[in-house]
Image 1 (cartoon, rainbow, N blue to C red):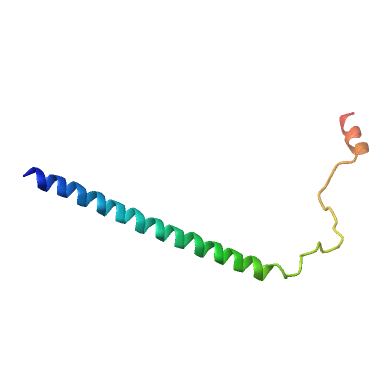
Image 2: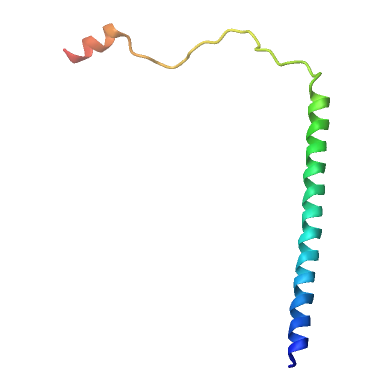
Length: 76
């Protein structure tokens, strides 16, 4: 293979690699911009939603716990 073909092949390979990197960086930039725009839209839509408050209520603990008096009697 002549030297000129090797040099020309290397130059074309570098140009192709450069074109792929430029195209990929453009796609990544578009993807990041789209994601940011979508996040901003969601934030803008959600900022006026009412804040959730704690619902007040009562609860009862139904687990069985030993009382101190019962525990002391069991040891004797």
